[in-house]
Length: 449
Ligand code: PLP
Image 1: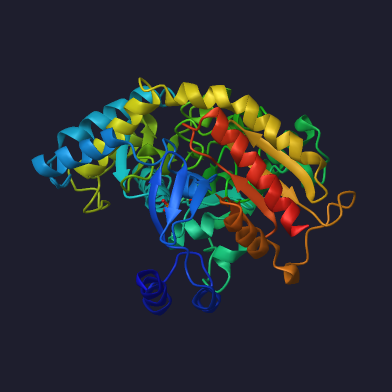
Image 2: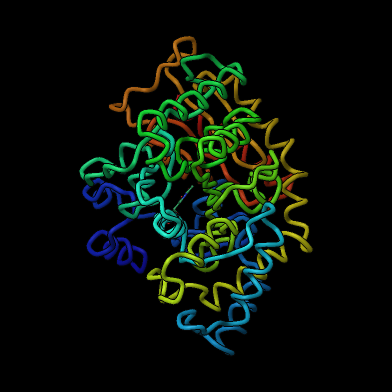
């Protein structure tokens, strides 16, 4: 009775993100009620192994009492403090300091947001301000990757390279451009890593030449393209793109909203290749989803460019009521402690070989065209013909069938529109959880055969 009422109310009133309205009214919601470790329970009492950490965010798993305590203590002490007009709060200052310590060298300044989309927006606005302040106002064009995801605001969805986020929303904007993804499985130059890297570098150079370097502000990239279906560029790609940006005199922005906080192994994916971006965006794992928060980290070059511009005494007109929210910041500090002193980052690195083995084992499955992954981030691309790499006919509604079969088998993963499965289990997961994950996943694939 109680659950019927909730599902009915959801159908009638709640608009769901990134979900077709009418099909949702017909299907109804899976209403999640509680979570512990990497297991969720819905209001029907079904247990679901969450192989996607919520939405690639609950890196430490559900039910950490120490995080709840940190939030409650901060709410009691000071539930809100503005960061406007020279006010500050202790958790936000301490979190900024900690992020600077943990991030690649050279990123010494932190601006807090509410999530990833407004972190991307903030990065774009600061870059525009930077070029105006430093006397190069023509540098206003931005380049990103096809299939990339940079959020749902008008600015971020335009930088995003996924048709679903453009369709009927009148983006990209005229100053937003895309170059092909570094997608070894479907690259026109084959899967040879160096060839894929060379191709991306050439594509970026060509786009900058077409627009004129004097008109290009920045290149945005995810180190691994999560929402594209976990497209993992070859090792060396990130460094090559960073170096190309430096050479072409455009800023390089790493969007680590998914890849940050241990998802690919180290604290940030940029570390793997010794890359220091000019700006870095982050969210999700920053608070492990326990409270909304994102951040933009900024190099001194960009910060000083803005700070020492022609109007240094006037306010910088960019900020949010909840920038540096003390409760979110207190949560972030405790989550960072769990990653480091709490051993969760080390656990992620320990689990990664078994995760990789689990992905590779699936390669033989009749539906699987390609498996790929890094750390505890994985993609499994399903095809109807392995030799031809043919995608499933959308009329077969494979993502929907996968999601329904997964639910019956007690697992949640992401089934992308093209039939790719995304995996991002909590990086705190145990060895047994991992075995259970792959057993339930294989059973699900067999069920949709
Ligand atoms: N950037 C990347 C790489 C993301 O994956 C996402 C969300 O998935 C965003 C930005 C947007 O973050 P949010 O949904 O917190 O606004």
